[in-house]
Length: 551
Image 1 (spheres, rainbow, N blue to C red):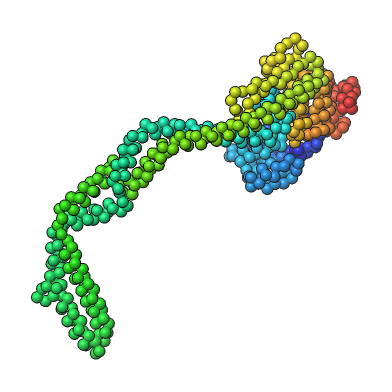
Image 2 (cartoon, helix red, strand yellow):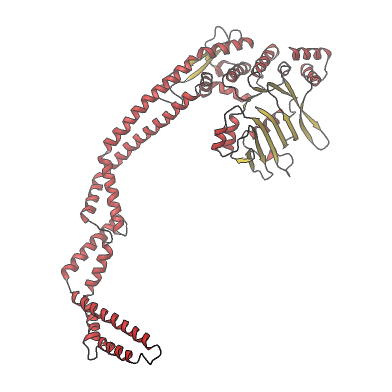
């Protein structure tokens, strides 16, 4: 329920706060007084797009706040999902800055407009004149039927299954398309895989082969250097190993009377051991290195094959080639298992379609069960609204394919006269007739699901007199179930309100200001009398106004 609306620095409104109550509230005022401005401000709180032009004083920000009692609507999970603090009295705030930027808050927590729209849609329904066009929208008609039938749980189950069904159909299509593409490439993939498989590539072999080829290519240089090193260390007239051995012993003799001599002797001994080890390894390596043209050819051919494969596949390492081979293997396995994979997906589709049929049938049965109730309720209220011969019918045209909301295409048909055929509402109904039909629909919805608040913006367009009086009574009765607010020009409707606000303008030399005031009983009497007789309020008008308020 909307408890209050605070507007600051918006259009012609400097600052105002409206305290709403339960039941049926009416808002009146002369054309241009600012009723649409108030609705525009409320629209910002409900998540509509902002514009810097709405700011009255361009030096300060515009702030709109709406306080709602949400204690009875089970919205805790919605708040939790968005990480917003839940309060039984929740405040929606919108700020428009002079820079043109806007910010949205719920209980002082910044939120995006999508969440603001989602939340406000569960709190309030603003019915403006253009929404009468919804009567010709099959989706709106289907939603009306589902609301009256209480199909929210069944529909949610169906939509969940439908989503899974569509996903499976997409997977089946993907498999078929992928298989068709892969079949065209199968021979080429098999050739590539066979070539890589026969290559028997091993991780790290390229670097090992390249190193071996370098050694085979420079055998003579290697043997020459190793031979020279071996000669210097072992075979010369004064071999380095022997000289170092002799020097080590001599240094050990003087170590006792040379400061640091022991350390020097030890280091020289370590050097001798290391050099001796090096000499032995040089000798062994020299013996191992042999010129082998056969092996050199084998290594070169192996490397040429690797280089060729790398160039063909546009990679630089053996590891990349191995990965390509594995990917080809996976693709070929997918081709081999296509029939099995497709069969598995089809099995899931069949199972899901069976469940979907069950849920769709349940929806159809539940919907068709309330057709007569909707028809009789709307026709009865239309008769009360001065349309004694009006006929209203709910038809269902079953669809062959599953849709987002089942297999039903709901159509509301209408005729205002006895002899006329039932036809789609927008084709045969006048503006006043559409307003009356929409009021009946909204009345039906309010009793079915208990929208927290509904605001009618001049739904009484095109009606007057006794019909307006009856529309007011319907809204008054709706106010027993939910909070109803009606912006109206008709005294017959204004007289039915439990509370009555007036929007008015005051002008000074420098500015025009719109204000909103809650009327007392006497002020209401004068306002409704003025709506009846115009600027000059007569005694007869006052008497008629009193009659409207009392009856």
